[in-house]
Length: 260
Ligand code: CAA
Image (cartoon, rainbow, N blue to C red):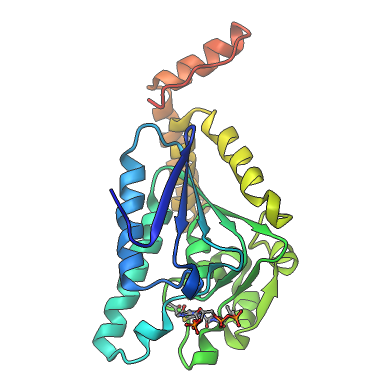
């Protein structure tokens, strides 16, 4: 499928999804959001793809936010629809059963920070900048920032970032727990690919289940989450990958997983 604002490239079992509007610093307009939803569903259905890396085209930005030129004259109903389109996109990235790594190569602001937060974890280049500057535009985050950021770093720190609209460095984002690792810009994709390939070489059923259990567990009590974990853990014993993984260990050979 051809996309206007996205590029998809495959390296082994890893797909690199690049948001490609560099002239607008990869700002998310409605078309891009809709294309991202299509792309993620397509990659979700692709049996040859185990892990997805999301990044932005150009040297400067991952994504500089939702498209301000599209939003500026919205009325209330258009704004609600746009926010819901954004949420559908963020949810598609969060809920896909495959692992999604955000490789943040520059500005990740507003909707750009929000889409990175919707991924499973974030790697950043040294020049990456994070922020939710929406209040400086007279609005506030509308693609999940008020929900995902407090869950990740706690309410107080999230409120400080959202209320000041301040931009932070990759190092500050690392210290806050937004970013997992920082790399020099020229190494970001190579390092992201290394981690993605390592994840792709493991049993994908176990990874899918772990993602589901971790995410579902965040919204329920510890005892409910633990119960869910036990049930899902048991289900994995009905899969080829579990038998293969354990037999391979005992036979002292590398497992060959099938993702089923
Ligand atoms: N929407 C639309 N266009 C954008 C954009 C955005 N979010 N961010 C940058 N651009 C465009 C600029 O208008 C400019 O276009 P022209 O060349 O046609 O003038 C081009 O990208 C390059 O940008 P700058 O000239 O501003 O580049 P810079 O290096 O001087 O500054 C920047 C970079 C600090 C990222 C700056 O562009 C900026 O502050 N961008 C806006 C960031 C922002 O406020 N994001 C939040 C958007 S609101 C949101 O996301 C709501 C939500 O929660 C859903």
